[in-house]
Image 1 (cartoon, rainbow, N blue to C red):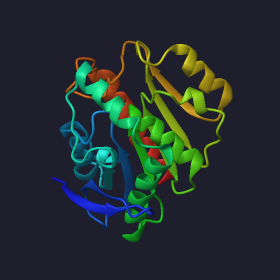
Image 2: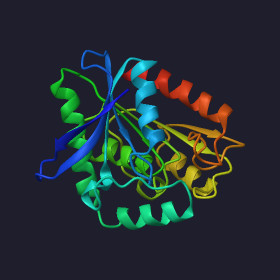
Image 3: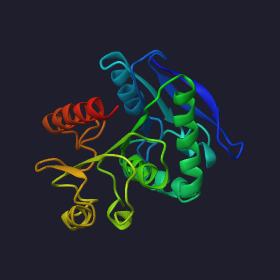
Image 4: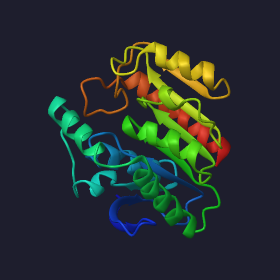
Length: 224
């Protein structure tokens, strides 16, 4: 099981992060939360990456800039509250916390660091790949908003996963990303909706989750 640590961003902001795995692990990942905070699900993802796949993982608590220790329920109220918290944090501040998390992993001797984001974290993972040169690979699951910034060129290999029945991310967005970034690997799971990888959400789809997980692990094995 992982544990909470404290990190400091370049602007002196102190924030919590969930760390799992050993510093001696062969691979390292920053995991980026959904719009609901550092939920039990995100912590379980980190634990699985550490215990089953041998990763050293850090997941920053991005909401700490707006409200410390914010963990929201997987329902419409939680989503609305999460969106309101997100509006209080700039993209530069988010990337500062992601950068501090990557540096913490690098300081443990990891020459390559990847980033894996879910939901809001998927967009953050994309922006980390395009706006920094910290990461050797980036993977995003159902990242909303990527289409609007898909003109930005990633500095590392990127893999994206979307649900074919996602009512938050239309197929036109996926097509826009394909057109703007033909080099990016994109998978669409026809019968899956938004949040299909989270077993705490009604949209959980076991088959889509397992296949996306398998593809993500193969992707990181290749590039990290």
